[in-house]
Image (cartoon, rainbow, N blue to C red; front, top):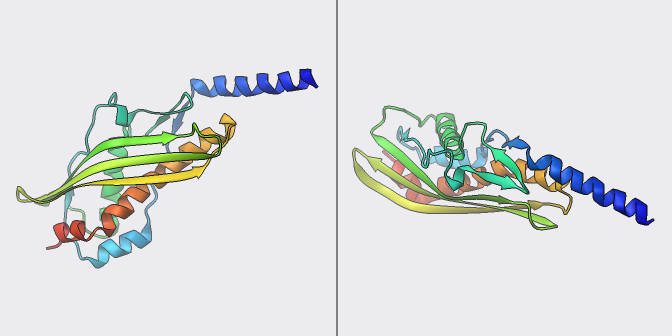
Length: 189
């Protein structure tokens, strides 16, 4: 029995070490169509999205780790991931125009996914959004989203769960932004 238990510990240690050097890609963003329907109903004017900050790939918000396994953005940085998600959503509701004089500027202030808890993983994203029209500020507000998901003591379960949860975290944040009446008013004609 002791030998079997030691083999089990050795296998778990090997699994954790094997994932320690791995790079995992965050899943592609998938829109929340209910939130987009609400945004579209507010009849937003055409809007451009400015490069989401920070663009530095070495900035802490662009570096996520899941028990030693590096989570990377398919867009290069997590700031670009959020930028792509915003543009995709605005195109979906026919409100995106790269040349518009109404602009959305965003800065990620906090971006975390944690699989350290034995039972539940968590994520938090905090973003400052500013909407300007012809240089006049119409909105400057910070939005914060939290998510939780089933995790495990076993890294082989927890790490993929954290990886899969990232797109949900971004979706949760954008759902909050789109549901905010102040945001809708800032985009209105």
